[in-house]
Structure formats: C-alpha cells, structure tokens
Amino acid sequence: MSPFRAMGAVTEPDRILTLDVLRGVAVMGIFSVNVVAFGMPEQAYFNPSAYGGAHGLSLATWVLNFILIDGKMRGLFSLLFGASTLLVIERASARGLDPARVHFRRMAWLIVFGLCHFFLLWYGDILTLYACMGCLLWLFRNKPVRALLVFAGGLLFVDFALMAFFGNAFIQAEAAAQAPHAASSAVATWSDMSKAFARPTPDGLAHDLALYRGGWGGIVAHRFAEAWTDPLVQLMFGTAETLGYMLLGMAGLKSGFLTGAWEPRRYRRIAAIGLAIGIPAYALLAWNGWRSGFTTSILFADAFGAAVPFRLAMMAAYASLIILFARRAVWLRDRIAAAGRAAFTNYLGASLCASLLFNGYGFGLYGHFERWQAWLVAPCFWAAMLLWSKPWLDRYRYGPFEWLWRSLSRWSPQPMRRSLVPA
Image (cartoon, rainbow, N blue to C red; front, side, top):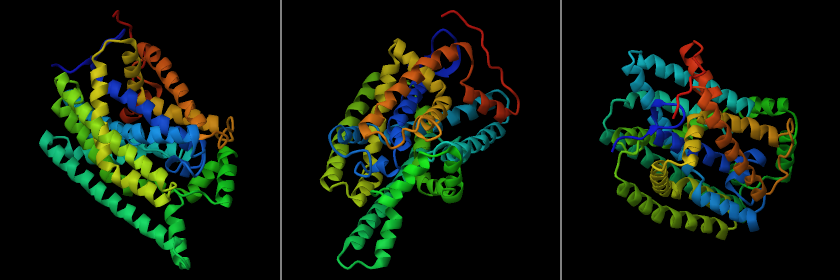
C-alpha cells in the first residue's frame, strides 16, 4: 500500500498525511499534561499531593493523564521529530542542496528558539533537547532499519537502567532522611534530590506563588539567575530516551510503519497488544503511587523507571490507532493534520497563551485552580489549534513559526502565500 499523501483544498505533493495526523495528535496531547505545569507549582506535574488536589475529580484527572497521556505524547512527538528530520535531509539531497548545511542550520536555529522559549516563556521547553539530539541524528541518516532499531534499543535499555538506578537511589535517600535520628546530611541530600517532586515547603510554595503571580521580568530574572542550568540537566538525563525514540522514528519512516504502508491488520494487532500491556501496567503503577500516599521516591521510581517499557508499548499502540484513523477521509482528520503541519507554531503558541493565562503579567490564574479545573483549559486549546490551523494553511504555505524557522535557516524570506487549487 502506498503512503498516504495529504489531501484537501490545497495540493501538498510532498506531505505524508499520517505523519501530519500523528504530529497533530501529539502536539495537542502534550498540552493536556503541560497545562498543569503552566498553572501550578512544578512539583504538581508528577505529584498530585504537592498542589491542586489529590482526591475526587483531581485525583481522577491525575490517574487518567498518568495512564493514558503522560510521556506517550512526548514520545510520539520525538518519533515524529526523528522521521521529519530524516525527510528534510533526504529532500534537501534530492533537490541538489547541501543536506548537511540545511540540517545543521535548522538545528542551530532550533536551539535559539528553544533557549528563548525556556528563558522567556516556560521552563518546560523540549526544543533545545530536540535540537541537540537532531545534530546526533545526522550520524544515523544512512543506517538501515535493522541498525536503527538496534541502536534505539540499546539507548532505551541504557535509559531504563539509568532510571532504575536513580529510582533506587531516590528510595534509599528518602528512607535515610526519614529514619529515626536521621543525620542532617541525609536530610539535606534528600531535600536537594526531591525538591522538584516532593510537596513544597510553606516557604517554598509562597515563593513560587509570588514569583509566578508577579511580573514577567521577575520570572525571567529567576530563570537566568537560578535555573539557567536546567537545559543542561535535561540534556544529561534525556539524551538516551529522546535519541532512542527519534531513531525509532527514522526506522518507522524507512520501514513504512509511520507512513501507513503496512496492512491494517498489522496495525490493529500492534494496537491491541500495546494497549493490553500498557494500560494495566500503568494502572498498577498509578495504584502503587496512590497506595503509598504519593511517596515522592515511589512516584519517581514508577514514572521514570518502571514505566519505561510500558510507555513504548503504549506509543506503538497509539501510533497504530492514529494511522488507522488517518485512513478515514473525515473532516476531523484533515483538521488534525493541519494542526500537525503547524505543530511548531501550535507548540510555541500554546506556551505563549498559557503563560498569559496563568502568570501574573497576564490574567494571573496561577495556583488558583484545582487539577481538574486546570485540565479543562486543555480542550479549549485543542479547539483553537483545530480551528485556526487549516484555514491558515489553506492560504499560506507554513505556520507563522514554521515560516520563521525556515526563513532563518535559509537566511532568506521564504514564499508564504499560496494559490488555491480546487479540491
């Protein structure tokens, strides 16, 4: 079966529809978990007892997000980044351009976008990490599918081993800090290790609320003064997983899996197996966290260590279901595909709008919602992505930030408007 090509009011001979639909679902799904990090202290992202409620609807929201969304959409986004990067390299070569120059210019500007995103808008940026991993992807561009799978498997095994090691270290450090007559050094070590995951102290919470309910200048100054190493820490701990997923994306493109070239029964089988493995496993991990009273070390070990293999199963299942959905010529599919074609703009635009919604220099809603209430913002952002993306791309070749990235990478303004072609 041939790969699906994008369809609609405007012809797109170089678009692969399944990739666009997958990317659209991923960028919307990512915001459904990120919204908590925009609206309340960062500890609440992983630990529902830290802020925003750990009972009733808020507990249900955490459980459903943990089981169904958290980590899976980011994983799909990483797969698609790997596949898209390979497409850009191959198409540059086919057009007689220098693929190395095209690729590394794109990655250099992506680092600039990522650092601006981190320092000026939101601490949860992934673009800087993606750009650095994108530079490494160049080394794998000509590898066959089998080699890509071997390298990806090795990296993901390393990630699993590292996260298991750190999870065990967290458990031991928390036990040492909470032991009778614990040494002050053990307490200090645990306090430093757990500050991004444990319930904040009253003073720490007051400082966080004051910071994000204050002005933009104070937030930016805080990031430059106290959080400037965060992108380096993310790079240190996220390399193996992120690069592994990106290599799987390259393999998925070359093998035809991500382009929709496989038989439907293969996708259905992968979806059934992946969900049968992933959902019960994640449900068990969620129960384990709740049973422990949301003990910080247990939450860390489960989310970052134990969940690793089950996350991959869920990602494969979701990708298969989305690819099957992309075969159906329905209006929603085309809207989601457009959101995926403008994923860069939708990702950065969501950060801009969420920052204005929650932070003190905007509407100042930071810390005023329970978890379930904050999550209700996500469907509103999904609707906005679906509403604007397709009409814009019916008239223009790229989303606004896609155009800016492309123009900067080529150091020349790219043609933006397009001519409409009857469907």
